[in-house]
Length: 107
Image (cartoon, rainbow, N blue to C red; front, side, top):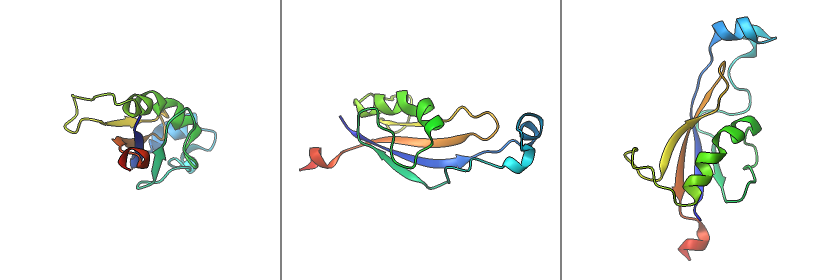
């Protein structure tokens, strides 16, 4: 199994949807939990990395666990990586997930 590095690469906020659907409207703003540049390491199992968004974890876990199990992604330029996002339709967050070698495999 490989570790998987999860990096926040983009945050979106659709104010017109927020105004129509969220209790706080536009004042809700973009995702309050994650920021562009945040990095997390998944080390296996079903445990979410500390500080990660639980809702995004549910959305991304399948792709992350596939990469951890050395799944291949030949449709991407860099095999072993994917671009995934959470399913929040008002304030989605986009992630780069990459299989990386863990310390146990290197030494």
